[in-house]
Every structure is written in structure tokens, then in C-alpha cells.
Amino acid sequence: QVQLVESGGGLVQPGGSLRLSCATSGVTFTRYAVAWLRQAPGKAREFVAVVSQRAGSSPLGDSVKGRFTISRDNAKKSLILQMNSLKPEDAAVYYCAASSTVIVSQLGSQSAYNYWGQGTQITISS
Image (tube, rainbow, N blue to C red; front, side, top):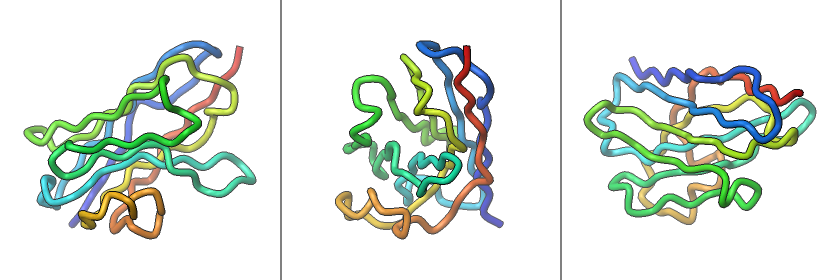
């Protein structure tokens, strides 16, 4: 059974930092690109960042470039999102997702993802 479990969400002040983790099981982790997507209330799900199978490519969404960093630990089968300089508009439910595609240009679309976690809430408030 495939499981993706996010952790690290919570309440943070504007300008603060958070580190999200995604633990995976039931998949051959190195065969999947892994990503973070987010969804704010009343908005469509948005691509945040992805790291390819061999970590050779890690594109970020335009709204988070320069502030967020994505990384993967293949030994631990986990995905990390380091979020700095958080803004109120970063508030959302953040989802971890895994894709078997090797075509990096497709990874910006949520339709590319085979497996999803349940999400973790990020709230930005002073």
C-alpha cells in the first residue's frame, strides 16, 4: 500500500520559516519524481516545487522562487520543503505527491501525479 504522509505544518508569522517533510512507503522511491503542491481556500491547487528521480532537476513555482527549497533523501525515502520568508499568500494545505513520469516539463501539472498525501495545513498570521 502506497502512503505519503506530510508533517511539519502549523502556524507561523509572516517572514518566518517552516520545514515540511513527506515520508513515503510502499513505493520504489527512486523511480518517482516527488513534489509539493498547495491549495488555498477557494483556489485551484497550485504547483509549488518538484524534484526529479535523480534530483537532477528541481523546478519551483514562480511564486516561491528564492524563498523555498525542495530536496529529497532517497535513503530515507523522504521529501523536504524548506520554506523561508513566508507570506500570507503562502497559507494553504500543502500536499506531497509522487509521479512516475520522467518528463520534467509535465511535472507542473497535478495530472502527472500518481499518488498523493492527505495534506498539512500552513497558516500565516501575526
